[in-house]
Length: 287
Image (cartoon, rainbow, N blue to C red):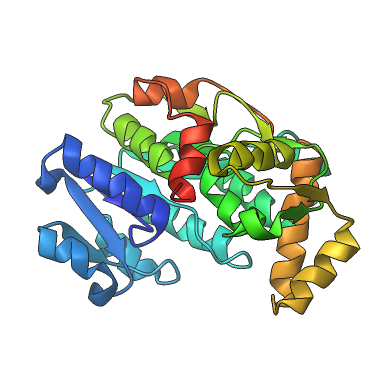
C-alpha cells in the first residue's frame, strides 16, 4: 500500500489522481490532519489515515501496513525539517519498506539566496539516507505553474517585471511531475534512486514574455527590475514582508541560474515527452 502525505495540496493531489488511474484503489491511502480536509478522497473510497506531522503517535498509527510512503515536503519553513524527521521515524518504527521524498533540484545550495528555505530539503534527504530505509528522491525543479505567481495572472496588460535577469529555469508542469512520481511509486524496486525532475529545456522570463506574446497576439514585455524596486512594487500591492523576501530570493536564484538544470528524467518516467512549453503556457493562461 502507498501512503501519500500532503494529498490535499496541489502536488499530492496530482499524484493521487494518477495512482487512481494506474492501480487498485485499495493500494492507496492518504494522510490528512482531519477527515473534513480529505472528504473528497473518502467519498471516492480511498482510505484516509488521520495524522499530523507534529504528532508522532498519530504518524506511527498511520504507517501501519504501509509499504511505501510518499513524503510531500511540508510548507512550514521553520518547523518542516523536524516534521519530516517525525514522518521518517514513524516509517522506520512501523517497518515501511520505502520512503519517497519530494525535494528540489538546484545548482549550488551554498550560493543560493534561498538557502534558509531550501537547505531543509537536503537535510531531510540526509536524514532519510541515515535511517536505513530504501529511498527515492524526486528533486523537482520549479513548477511551470509558478509562472502565474511571478509573471502575474494578466501579463498581457501589465507586462512581466521581475529581478531575474536573463537567468533560466528548467520548468516542469506540476501535473506532469505528479504523473511521473505516480509511475515511479508503482515500480517494484529496492534500489535507492534520485531523480532530477525538470523540463528538457530551460527558459528565461524574457522567453516567457516572448512566448506569451506569440500565443496572445499582444506585446508582452519583460522588465528586469532591481531587487529594491521589486520589493517596493510588492509592498505597494499589499504583499506581506515575509513573502516579499521569499519572492526576491527565488528571483535572485533564477537570475544566477540555480534552477536552470535540465534532464530527461521527467520524460523517462512519463514514458513520453512532456507537453511543450508553449502548450503549458497556453493551458495556464487559458489561451
